Image 1 (cartoon, rainbow, N blue to C red):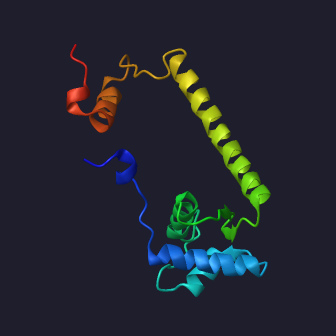
Image 2 (cartoon, rainbow, N blue to C red):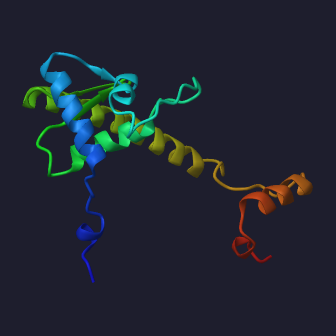
Length: 152
């Protein structure tokens, strides 16, 4: 049986290497690289989604950039900022990016604890079955599995 670390080990592909090489060369020339630039330079690997409704024009680029950063095979850190990508030039830049990520995580944890606290107060996290029985039944049938209903 494989250990949990071995099971979750990242498989680095040619697509990862192509993205990394592109970002290294463009960073060395002083350029930031957009999703469009990457899709234009690596059309066999990435396709730009032109729809305005998406946060990312190419989510595969973000995933590959994250995979590269998490992989021990690559020494450099990819900085992804507002659809721009670049390689961190030095440790200070990489650490500044890491601190920015921590700030985002802290913000999300604050929001989590605020929501959790509200759910624990005044029964906000509980379903009130008094009053509109039909609405309560629709809620139960929609969101609760049949075996999770409480026996009364």
